[in-house]
Length: 274
Image (cartoon, rainbow, N blue to C red; front, side, top):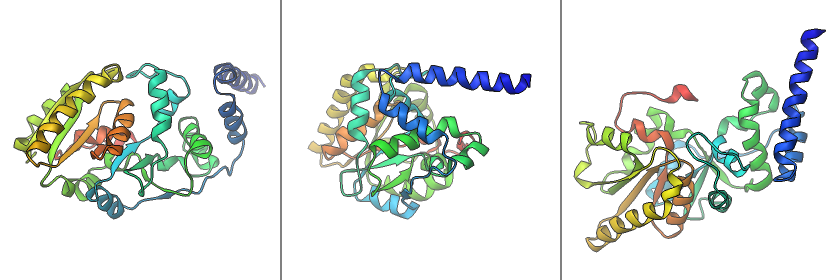
């Protein structure tokens, strides 16, 4: 009885904190999440692109904007370890979420979230992934195809469906110093003479968003003067989503591949984090 009481008390405490966190700022989400939480079979039918389709879209010039649990947390007025809450960033994330293959960019969401609640409960991923499923249900277009947000966290996918799209491009990396140094020192990376680097902060990179945009814009202007075709690969936290959306809509291809940037032409694996 005492164990059951402890479990019930713990749930009530968490439920109370959840209500206090959302009741004044995002009441609609609070209600939708509360209703979804207790449905074992809560499931949203979402279609995902195959690897071949993703490669074809990249080669056709589409940008990529990915959403994960961190972006949902920011849209829910929370701060992250690597990015404090910013109302301008939140607005940008909402603007960026509705793309499709008919637009300048495609949107990535976490495919693991789109199974029943019972499966997620058994996998112990319900609390992590249910917020994104509820957000997709509330805000995203459900008659569009998406890519799995973690698609390029697997070496096989990077090698088969991303690397072929890099050939013949002037590549602009926008990311943190450690990743830039890793790319520069990687003897397997074949495009160093055609690569440009924009360094961002490790944390709260969105604070420098205007500076980042200017630096990228300067490089792109120089490349266009020489009739070179730029491809931006960006990974600087949640601000990357807004950046990929805004530049994609301007006709500049930006690939938001997240941590996948760390395994370009690398043998190390990161798919253990999935």
